[in-house]
Image (cartoon, rainbow, N blue to C red; front, top):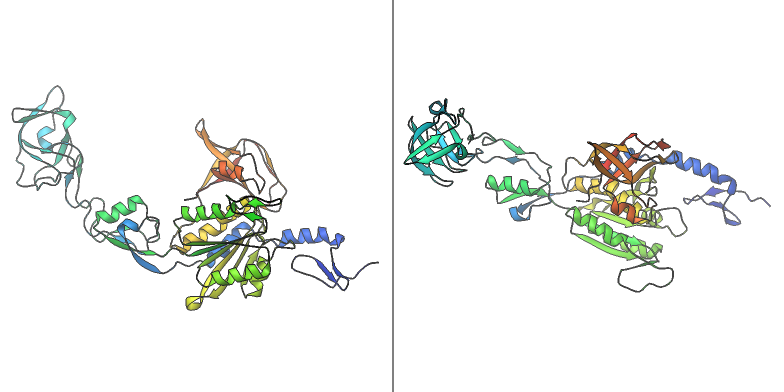
Length: 447
């Protein structure tokens, strides 16, 4: 006896007076509708980034700045270099005195004194004389160029010069890099060791940066057990917690609370509500698909989270979820990301969708990945409908970049991602990438 279908619930199940039934003839229709309704990767990324704002600023001491992002431009506090100084070990001369100097016709000059880095440059160099200078030494008045010591010989108070030099050669001129008041680095740059070095060059002891986000990680699954504990039948070790905490630490985010919940609405709701009070972003793992025990979206709806997207046209990672809610101190907008439970799907959606948002919250101006063009070493095929991130290894061979997919491309096979240094972008509408074709590859950056 046929049963009438009154409605479809959010999991795509048909509801009727006789209970929940799966209407087989609806499956192809729902499948095609689902593909058509899925948001593209580019639109999904634009959506999540539109809700990411840099966090408040703070002053951090020079020795602790690594990994933060500049909240204001770095302004040169003085000329750089601060004074004319020697770029090499050698001899400061008047350029005209050595115009004709060569190995076969050397020039003899009187050697006046030696100046080291840290010495004061006193007096004035007269024509026909030279001064010995070491790297970094300030230039006395009158020195127009430096001859490298390899082209000179010292003898009885003289220096024999066997190489002609032009005016300004091997002298680091005052203010050649920056003048006082110049912008040395723009806002939004990540603080790397050279950035720390430049700040120290200008005498900074601390600098203004954006606070790093507080992240809460909620991993769902009745089957999950922490590594080191014995497994019972049907259980597996939780790899997602360790992997995503490592990914956060690779970004410099240490403030991360990690909890594991069962696939039960009450458990998920309690933990999510608790974490939203203090975290800037909550990342859930698992429970975002359409299975009978996937409750994350349902719980988010229940507590008032505004859903901005659910299901993205990518592989792996289709069930990705993103929502926002105003909670906690100042009633600030909190971000909620729902990642699929399969480890590769979780890692890749974090890398492609969550990491750029967290970087923007940290103050980064450019969160774009590094894309290269490489020659594909083998045919790749897929069904049209979703953009696919194919894990690969890109190498340089005979002067060109060549990329090969790694073994283990299924969403539960972490080994393929562990081996990979790039992702091959297989366009959404494409079905074949042919051997020898130039393809777009994205470098994987976990730092």
